[in-house]
Picture 1 (cartoon, rainbow, N blue to C red):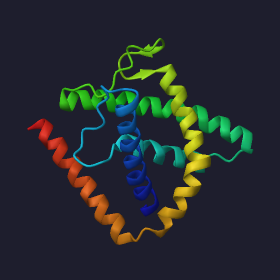
Picture 2: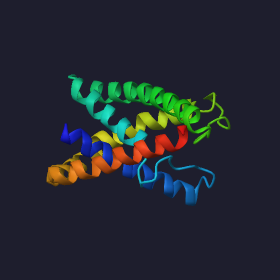
Picture 3: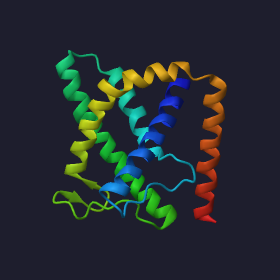
Length: 164
């Protein structure tokens, strides 16, 4: 469980950094998060899903790579669709909008982005995760649960802020 919590937190922070870079380089109108802290949970949840899927697939390397790509692409697209709609419902804000893309389906999903999620799932799973796994194993349990408690508190306060 600690392994997944650390991945959730680490990649949620990476997601925040990624979107901050996008905000200041490519997409100045991007809204990078609804929480107070420097994390975007959908990235952390997405990577945890990718890790879980990858561990369950027991095929040859090539077939596993293709299956991880397509399953991750599909599941992360669904996650993005649900996340976008939930955020809009709770906060009355649109945090991203793919309507300008050629193959969009509503505001929250587009084929172009889904393909990027599939590609990123391969990059994360086979290139980045082996490096972050070494770091994650060194994180003391106390630090994991302290940061996770702050994350949950941030999530709760941010949620309550929008519904009250």
